[in-house]
Structure formats: structure tokens, C-alpha cells
Image 1 (spheres, rainbow, N blue to C red):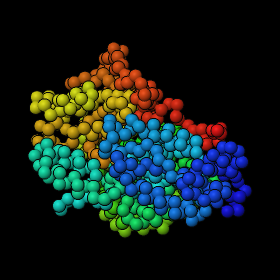
Image 2: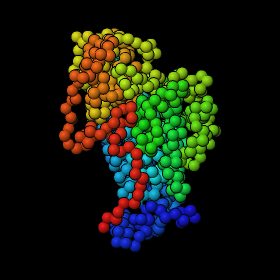
Image 3: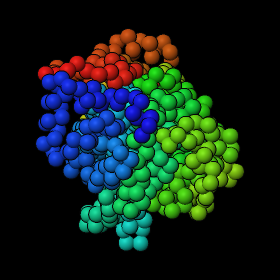
Length: 565
Ligand code: FES
């Protein structure tokens, strides 16, 4: 407390003045039954909540917020919960990614405009994590993240089933007749047995792991199941810690350094993490002013083995990962192999090594060591070539090894509607060696950069037992998905990238022919002439730089805004 008395809290510019504004700020807040001692200069902690009934993965966040408040009060802080727009992956259309940057604006402006000294971000479903972190990064207050935790393992009859991953499997089984619609209806409820986010190593679990690897949460954030009492203890302890962070002035920029991002990229490789982490980390680094490029994913991630046997690359789920020891075990393995900056600072004011050095692996079937890894290649492969001059990505751990070197003629779909119309047409001229190309699904194209890159194979080939084919698109893919899919092709087709001019039957075309086709290319009509979609499509950057809006890169800190009355 001695330290807090010396430094005037930012919140005191609202609550600690004798102006008319000061009276207005205090008086109206007191209508919530808040006693006057809460306005005495103690740290005010904003709890940024993405609770929503249309974001089922975050539907338990009101309860988590109450546990955070307990911890904040215990340490002499003053918690204030505030809502921001939420992004429910399984419900929202056309894609939550269209709104990630919009939410980041909501978060940034909500923080800056209000009397907060420190921030707790409650994140869970895929985009809620990067959106909140990007917005908070642009304000750079002491900030700590709490992930909502994964659902319990899915169980259907005698099978363990994983969120998302089994949706793709069931969809294919329905097409081939191996499952009936009644089976699917029975299985879908068994896939979502409890509160929490997807329990595969999909995007939500990946981003929760990224939070921990970046040092932005207390240790063990990623894997504690949402309904486990220890998730609520974790929230309570995080509430205690954020008050200390404010007193220590431990700002986000002290944690989110280049070293932290390098650690996160390597951890992503070791967990077989989602390709979506690429764009989210690039965008976060952009907000923080940390230089990070797509090539860093290749150079830093290339030699990282996959250590975690979790769906979609493996067979277990997040609940098993937690019981096996969770992310601290993985980080300890990486540190011992020289693949982690041990001295990177974390929000508990300790280094990563301090946090993970005593971790114990309780199940080597779930978490492997670096000497005998689960898969030798875990990182994200960055591909460049005449179809992707500024880059594309592929997840080797989820791909078919035999397809990693392949030649085949293109079967082209101009956009997602064209794909849906023709993919199951028995007359489609396609065989198992064809390369399926899907255009106009990038940030500007869809618009919003949807997760359709793991688009399903033609039914007639599935029925013949074909399980995987090369697919190339400018789309993303769900972190729960798998297959030999080239994603994030940049520049995208709708921005005039070479993907736009690929034609049916192409196998190898000359540079001269490519140049001729590109010169004749015409930009598609804009999706909208008003509102968010117009602003988004005019300013969104390409996948290789993180898909942020060009005018949101960087930050403005959290200066005190002018008085309002
Ligand atoms: Fe919300 Fe997967 S749908 S985390």
C-alpha cells in the first residue's frame, strides 16, 4: 500500500477531484451501492467481460468475474466489470473474424474512456482472446488475461469426441452413409457436455496457450477445464495479482516483448497449435510495436517438434492435457532444449523459467519430450511461390505426409457459392490427384476471412475412400480441422493476388501467361457501401501482416480524456 500512496492512480482523475465532474463520477457510481472508501485512490480494476448467451463458450463468464472481484477486493482494489461486444464462433455469421478488429476498438476505447488503473481480460471463444488483447495493447495499462477454460472431454457411446474435429468427421460420415442423421443428433449433444470453449487444440485452446506462453496470465491458464473448481481459484488469484501489478506499474509492454512473441511461436509449434495464431500474434505485435513477421514463424517454428498428442493432430483432449501437467510441462521441455527464452517476464513478475521449472509430466502418452517427440515437425510452415508472393501457411502436423510433395491439375472454385454448387456434382471433373483451389475467401473477399479453407472433398471421392487432398485458398481454417490445406494465400484473390487468375486445368503456367492474366484482372464490386463492412474492406490489411486495420496498428496509451461535464 505504501507504493500506491506515492503514485496517484489514473482513476483518481475521475474519482479524486473536487470538480463538478468528480461529483458526477462518484455520485452516479454510488447508485450501485458502492461505499465511499472505494473511491479513495485504491487501484480500480476493469474486468472486461465477453459474456454472452450467443457466445456459448463464454457463457460462464459472469461467474468467473465474481471470483476475480473476490481477489481484487482482498488486495484492496476496486473491481468494475464492463461488457464488450462478444464473438460467438459457432453462431455468428458470416464469420467472427470480420469483427475481431471491431471488438478491439470497443475494448481500446472502453478502457481509455473509463477510470481504470488495471485490466483483467476474460477471454475464451476463438477471436475474443486476440480482440481483447489487441485493444488492451493499444492502451498499455497493467493487464492480465484469464481464459475461460475448455469444456470437459466429449464422449459419445464408446468414443472420445472432440469439438470441431468430430464435426468434420461426422459431416464426412454422413456424406458416405457411415452415420445417419439420428446418430449425428445423438453425437452433437455429447460433444458439448459442459461449459467452456472447444476442448481440442483448436483456436481457443491455442490462444489460451499463447496467452500463457506470452506471459500474459498466471501459470496453468490454458488447460484447467471451465467447470473445474480450480478455474475459479485461478480467477480469484488473478484478481489478487492484478492489484499488485498496478502497484508495480507492470504494464503490458513490459511483458509483451519480442522475446515473449518468440516464445509463443515456439510453443505454438510444440502444441500443434492453430494456424489462426499466426494472424492473431502478428496483429498483437503490431499493436505493441514489436517487429514480428510471417517469416519469423518459419525461422522460429521450423525446428520445433510437436510434443502434444491432442486432437486435431493427435488423439487426446484438453482435459487430459491438464491432468498430464498442462502447458508448463511443454514449456519446460522447450526451455531444456534451448527453444525458449527462460528470462522472459510474466505477469506474476517472475520469469517463464521460474514458473515452469518444477513442472512434472504425469502422462507421457499425452505430452512427449523433445528427444522423442509426438511428431518431428510441429511448427507452421510458411510457403511462398508464384501463387503466394507474400506468403501462405500450412500446418504440417495436421497434413498427410504423402501429399507434402505433390503435382496435380487445378480444379477451381471462384468463390464459396460456386464451391457449394459444384463440389458434390457427380459430373465434376476431379480425381484424387487434383488440387482444389478456392478463391475469394480472404479478408476482403468473403468479407472477413472465414474458416472455410478445410473445405470438404467431393462426395464421390470420399465414397471411394479418399481422405485428404491438397486444397489451396485465401481462407483460414478452424483450429480444430486437419488436412493438407494451404491457407492465408497472400495477397488474396479479391485484392488482385495471383490466386485470382488460376483456371481449371492449370498445372504449371509461365510467368508471361501469369502476368498477362493479372493485367486483365478486374477488382470485384465492394460488398457494401456503408457501415462497418465498408470501413473494414477499405482498411483491412492482408493475412501476412495480421489482418488488422491499417489505422489501428500501434497504440496511443491511456492518456486522461477531457472532462465531460
Ligand atoms: Fe467457441 Fe470453439 S466455438 S471455442
